[in-house]
Image (cartoon, rainbow, N blue to C red; front, top):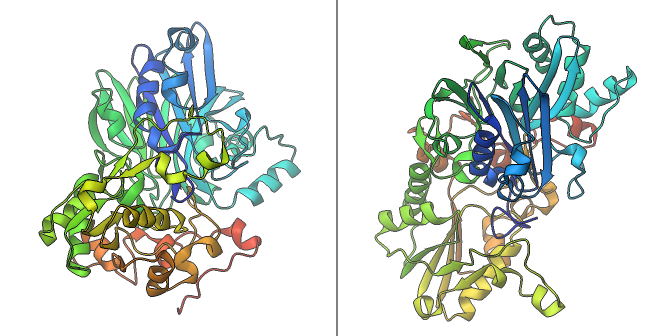
Length: 485
């Protein structure tokens, strides 16, 4: 599948994006547009479910991009109705790299009071235990996805309405979840008590919209109303939006990496422009880790706002020293070993005339395995750069995420086994500096930095401090960081 980022094997990947709409004409087309705006959150597959009072529930699930599957009139005609939800996927749970169409959301269930469909962004950390219990009681699973647990829990609930059943089911779920769901007449949305993953509410004419990010509201010209709060559940129908809080209140722990990389730069998170936050990260980097150089160059495209911030703060000119090939798609044929070995060169090219003889600061969002960073360094040096300095717009990624991000095993994370100096030597560069955790917190608006006694965000991938115990992974032998460390 085509990567959201040109270095598909060396970047953290968000699991998915969700979108729902009610009270509009031709809901499926609106959902398709919303999913297109959320494509960066998952490129593996997508699905749409709608309901029409004449034809009932309809669904379509496909592998690949939204633009290739949900734009032709013939397909969209099979999805009639004024209400619909959709999902774009990159697998973190389930059969990674070997997804079956049955794993593609939204999932649908028929209950005594009618049908319901559900789409989930995040990861259920007790899914294995739940699945074992449900199968033991007679549930028959159709997919390998952790999200299907929610449908089975709803089926076993004694709630008198589908919203009641969804609420009861989600009370049994641990981990991170932002959910959109639908019945024949209602659109529902819910975030876990810590609000790890995003979900926003918008207004479109007389209708309503739920989406993972505000950029999905922009594409359909909907008005952003507010974020769904951590632990909040909304039920939307012809009478408007009903809100309540079914879970015990907790201090929010929104994923800080949404600000660094996952969300689109034109989205708004927590009232803050993602682009401006990333520019602030670059400014903090320049304050914390200055270096004499001639040019500041982003690693396209995710490093661009931070590189601009670094340049503005340091006074070192910004330049596009690396150019991304915008037409590197999934239809590209790699017929020979020599072509395959070109690797990053198929996706990026160094602007030789610009970098030759220059001291270059390369700004990237993260270092995961380090394989791509080494290749980029080699390309820049081969183009004649005098020095190469890396500045990274996040702290060292030393711990895996269990809340909806595809992270390598801990031993494969470069920062889990090496110090910053060791990573610098391993990459073969003149200097390597990451933004500090406090610096990152300052960049997202926490003037005093991180509160170590009560962190304001989920930063487990950097700190090893998990706000939700990863029960399934611990059963498999994962060892959490000692509390005193």
